[in-house]
Image 1: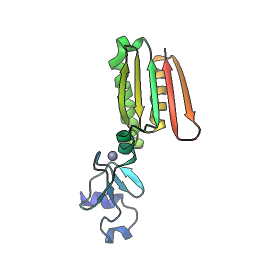
Image 2: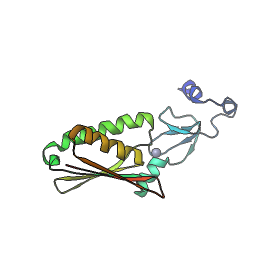
Image 3: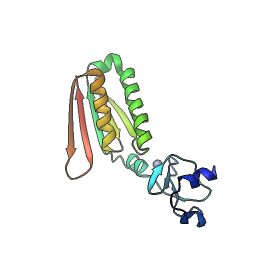
Length: 153
Ligand SMILES: [Zn+2]
C-alpha cells in the first residue's frame, strides 16, 4: 500500500517529510495529493479536510442542475436512471469530484439531478439526448461556473 502512495507522489522531497501535505476527505476518503483529489490508498498520516465535492453536497451548493421532463419517465425511468448512473461512473474516472449529489422526482414525468460541478450535468444531458432524442437546453451562469440543463421530450 505504502509504495502506491509514493508512486503517486511526483515530488521526491515530500517523501523525506513523510506524508506532510497529504489531506484525506473524511466523508468520501478521496486523497489530496500532488495538487489533485484522487481515489487512492489512504496514507498512514494525513490531515482531514472535506473535498470540494462533499462540501458542495453538504451545503446543497450544486454546480449543475439537470431537469428531465418527459412522458418517457413513466415507462423508462429505471433505464434512464441507469444511463445517468453510468455517465456518473465514467465521468468519475476523469475526475472523482464529479458526482451526483441528489436526485429528486417531481410528479411522474420530471426528474431533477443535482451534480457537484457543471460538467457532469451537461454531459448527462447530452447522453440522454443521444439516447432518447428530444430537446436539450444548456444555460450557463456568467458570473460563476454553474450550469442549468433542461431536457424535454
Ligand atoms: Zn469528499
